[in-house]
Image (cartoon, rainbow, N blue to C red; front, side, top):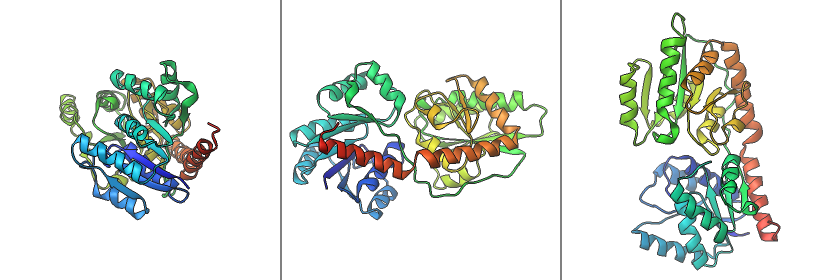
Length: 362
């Protein structure tokens, strides 16, 4: 049994945070696990409770950056940590330095997008090539992209995200108003302008004269909220698009959704797509990150060109106007998740990776 630190930047409701908790949960029966939060003033009580309910030891670092770093080094030494799994760029940086100072056996970085900004890329490449033992990617496109840009190939590993599937397959009834949903932060990466244009083209061009209608729910929060609301008003879509800010009843929105829309410019393994699949929702998504691995084009959804709002609208139109296809795609979406992204697969992948580290096979 090894002492393992799962190191995450915050404990807010986000994809990386959810995966960090899932990793701690997956490993806790085989190893001594600590979930360490770098920015302890950014936490949500519900996520701390989830961790504690799963008997995961949570370490919250607070104070200025120097105080937090000192506490991190002290913690690593005191608990004789053998392995650090970092999840994001800042964790890779501080975890690497603290790990070296504390003589941690294995420093494992994490990259969760297919693309990263240039300045971060320079730092991450240096850390990967010269400081960390391995980097775990949650997506194959990111690994291939960064190897092409100078990351050492032999120390890049892919372990996709997982999803705890605890709801049954849902087959939804036919209806006249089809609900479309996006669930993501309001940031440039998610390209909501393309999503809004596609809904406008679908509702005001393709569905003209039809007895069917659509309603689009944009669910999330973020810095671009006002820009999104302004664009909705510009296109006169206030009656068609509803913006929902960080609701507590997300499962209810997903249960009522008929199509999931993702217009991201880039992704890793998208947690929001996994969540949509768990609710048996067919997906229309852009070809970013590993979206094409999550969505079987023409079987469980459609993969579209990034930024092409007309193509996206046309694929949604196909699903809106064909109830049988929606049902067929719903079943395929759910089954794809059930077969490929379970907690067991995720756990086995990480346990095998740890075993190979210890035995020196990696």
